Amino acid sequence: MSQIQNQSNNSPHILVLGMGGTIAGLASNPDKDPLQYAAGQVEIRSLLDHIEFAIPEGVCLVSKQLANINSCNMTETLLALLGNAVREALENTMVRGVVVTHGTDTIEETGLFLQLICGKFAQNLGKRVVLTGAMLPANAPNADGPANLVDAIQWAASPLDNSPGGVYAVMAGKVCMAMDLAKRHTTALNAPIQNSPASPVRLINPSWLSGVKAAQAIWVEDLPIPDGDTWPWVEILTSHAGARPESIDLLLESKIQGLVLAGTGMGNLHEQWLKPLSNATKQGIAMVRASRSGAGQVLPNIPEWDFEGCFAAGKFSPPKARIALQLALNAKKQAKSAGKSLTWQDFFARIAVLPEIG
Ligand code: ASP
Image (cartoon, rainbow, N blue to C red; front, side, top):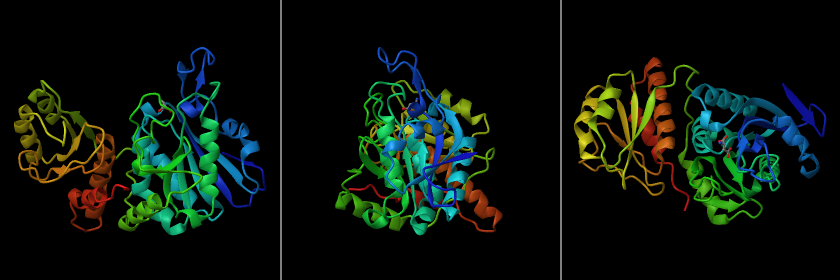
């Protein structure tokens, strides 16, 4: 399952979990057209072989391939597999830190997911979980993956005096909290991190660090991981010119449990949707109002759009709000089995207060 590099089997190590992505991608004609490639082709072991010379003395690596996919095809089953593998690794006293190589398309969803299911655990143990990826395939002339991987390994292995344990992401020479990742460019080398509050990875910025500590102080308890096939069905619907009520009516005939509404501007919704959305809440469908704008916050309590029980997504993009809603619905279900009557809104409120790092 795993390979040991550099040192003996029983020395503390960094576990590198491979999920695929462009960092493991291959272009058919890399010199001419590096952006024509297939993601998830190269094994994590082989990616590590190529950077062995750059790994600092004393750092021992173990790798495990969990998947090798284009992350546009990420599944909930794979999220659960990754979440359980990371938690297990954190519990292992021989593991000093964890690096996850991941496609950048959905890295922001995985980043928030890992924060919510093991952010506190990692912090309490003083260990780092570090997501990384690349925008150019492994065989491109200026591939960015090797440098990103070396930086991520170093950040996972470096002493805690420059920043606490927790769930981070490293790319293009920067580090941010994994929950702050947001891919907002199709090709820029720093696409997933360019709009995130981040610090240069080799020279930690004190104000970023105090923001990390503030966010970690607020996140007091991790949420359970839904079992592979019990993830609540939550869809994202985008409001737009010419929105039709039928799009929602059709969904109401299904077994959907939650809706994330990607509104315009501050989370505004087309008036054509108001009636079917109010029917949806009466049917018990959980609803979160987010924005398709790409940055900024959606504030709560706008009477025109906040149907009873609908929650504003705060700083979360629609895909992140979807992960948050799924985990909140699952946490409510598990609390109910344990005899506690908490609502999904109780759990979502705990997630939504996670602050924006200034
Ligand atoms: N489509 C790729 C993926 O998400 C993009 C990347 O990794 O940059 O797997």
